[in-house]
Length: 374
Ligand code: UD1
Image (cartoon, rainbow, N blue to C red; front, side, top):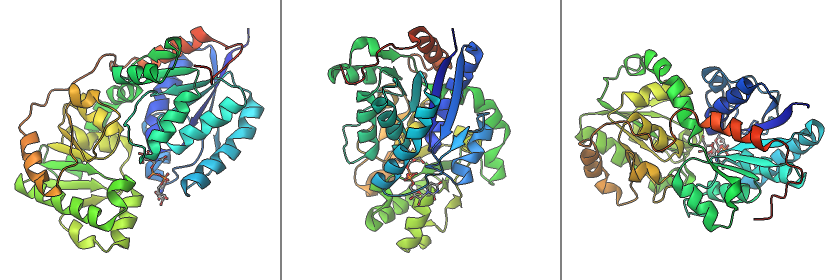
């Protein structure tokens, strides 16, 4: 019998660390032919090319070069770019990961062509429809035939939305597969020393969500309270700025607020992992970093009102903060007193991708994919 054909779609930074272990697990099985398509949603080297090297991910077989745009423009062009490739390759499965616009585009094209969709990191819900990712998650899950989940809340969300139990596969967290594989290499880079920082004496910050950076007053208040929080604890602030955030700081004339900050360009995966590992604290509005800090045992304050990853709060080191920004310094000081033990929620054990490959090979070719029947 011919080998199972899997087409993987990735597009933005958080996708790459999720697909890398999945591709490796299929490779080990040997029974699967794989095609990797990069939509090109992210195109800066630090957000894209360098990650492929760090993650030992094969170069993409194709790059659609979609780039930036409004949501409709970016998603629409990705859909148009993916359709002929899927028709031509005619895969048995389309794998789509996470919740970015490329994730959604892949699900729409595959489902309309009658190709079964596998969604890695399915079922996460913030309940916040102002997040484009929430819409991407919902629609992708609705169209998927195999839904690979990372935590119990995801299983519950999918069941409550009417997804059939036999489509839900609770396999664990592929981000943590990657973290466990890379953390020693990351430590070896000695990032704090390279940046002139003392281990345990700095806060690592990431900030890029439109709700935090697209309004001048909000962005200014966040930056000021971060600076104050770090000063109160005699820590430095290191911020690898996402291109969107750098652009907003310039546009709003907020450069003076980041004068004392160690502002660095977006870091490579291994570099940022190395930085997180030795940080006193991480402050972020990202999704995946909430999970990574939990597994590293680093206190994390997430500057959002909701999380789609509640296990990082109930079991891990994560705490949501959406209060008055003037209160942030106290919240930060308190967070520093917490213990720093790594936490690995159930199945965050480095073998999630292995389980995904096992399930997929077992499912094999679905004779009549019917993704819209739940
Ligand atoms: C995307 C994801 C978000 C994820 C984030 C991680 C969606 C809806 N959002 O957000 O979930 O957390 O990636 O980084 O898919 N830009 C560059 N160079 C690049 C890419 C983007 O300069 O390589 C700038 C452009 O000005 C662009 C802006 O960043 O307009 C936003 O990029 P986009 O891909 O639309 O979304 P992200 O904010 O990166």
